[in-house]
Length: 199
Length: 379
Image (cartoon, rainbow over all chains, first blue to last red; front, side, top):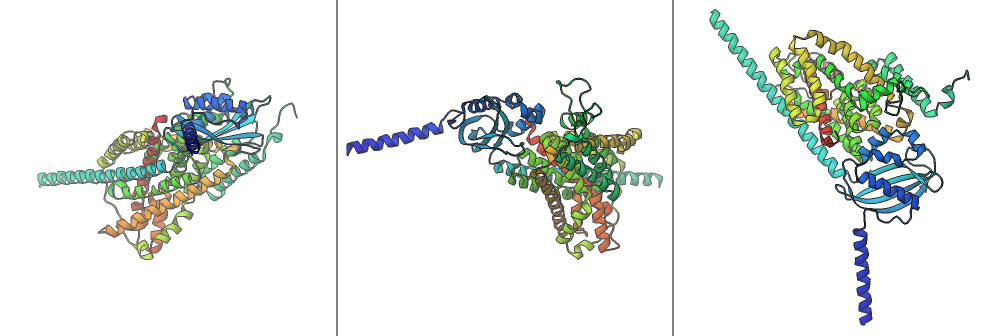
């Protein structure tokens, strides 16, 4: 009876510890399915992006990819992906797959790594890193993308944007009407005064 | 052959297709006269940019030696992506060309110009739903403002990768106002509403009002949305030149030579920003569809507010005026006038519609400025 209870405690203890381990895992979590070179590349990329060194991440792209995309264009894309979402608090590898076709990239041997990431501003994000083999066990980066639930932010933009457009346009309408009235009244008074003077 | 590397072997299927699209634009501009001032140079830029081995679109960078950058690359980099000078100067010219008199005489039209911006936000939501990121969604939504320079300026800063396609969509839909707007207007209004006759003339607007308007309007808008300054500031500066009456030479230059030169550079740049690899994928079709939807919803938004205003107004108020709130100047105002005149031969809506139309220009610049201000930490 006692040993059964002990076993139960051990079981629950392990479960809690496992949960704590997963929840508080370091920024780079499970990567066991990735080849070491690819894992190293992802780590290097995440370090740069988390530190805001977006332009430098171009150095990690494969030479073949660099012929397709310029440093400026890559930098612009990284700004668009990462600028507004802050640093990663935790990151967990959830999927690794090999594919020959990915998005607009030309056909090739790609390794796709998908991470579940908690960012400062978006706790439920998914990061996708696509790499291609650069020979002798090395990998080069060809794609990086973050996706998160954008609806709360989008709803705020729509609400605030519409409100602001209507507010400004209404304000201008009132002001224009008011200025018109003042100028018309002044002109009428002036005309009346001139008429009276002549009369 | 002949000791040089020719382009035939390097021409890809995608490039060939884009060259055909460019030639199609040139055909539409010349044969159908669809926005020829825009579509002709866009088409030319498109086919030049897609001819292989030319280096025309190579952008200047520190790694390149002198003379290595192409003319279209220089226009793209300094005119559209890095300095974004060209759309701002187009706004300057538009300001010099615009008479805000009809709007000043009938300030209610400001509200119609606001309502027509609903299309921007509906397509923004649609773009998010289809998986575009927030900045791309802003750039796609702004097509609904039916304002080329605002679309170009906003997209150039937020999502340069889709600049060519959003700008082309904006200008193409502006060219198709006569096809897009009438069915929407007819669907949302009754014959009786379309026949509503308004006073043919608006009150005369004094020179003082016309001079004061660009000053106070720009101060208010820019104080509230500082990032709208490049567009709104230039628009009202051009207008102040026009209305002041003391700098006729400058105003004439802004209305003619300057806007013509900038139009050539801007439209060539837009065409050149569409190499095959950036355009030929499914996302382009989505952008085109969302842009069309933005335009249609904007028209509907304007007409629906027009109906409310018509219901509230003591004097006859034709709800079709709302459709002119999209800023396709002056085409949508003409469409409204034409439809009104078709239904009632005594109806002359042009000046009323022009008020809503120029309000739309301000409304779309405000909406674009809001998007840019939202991401202001970038600049």
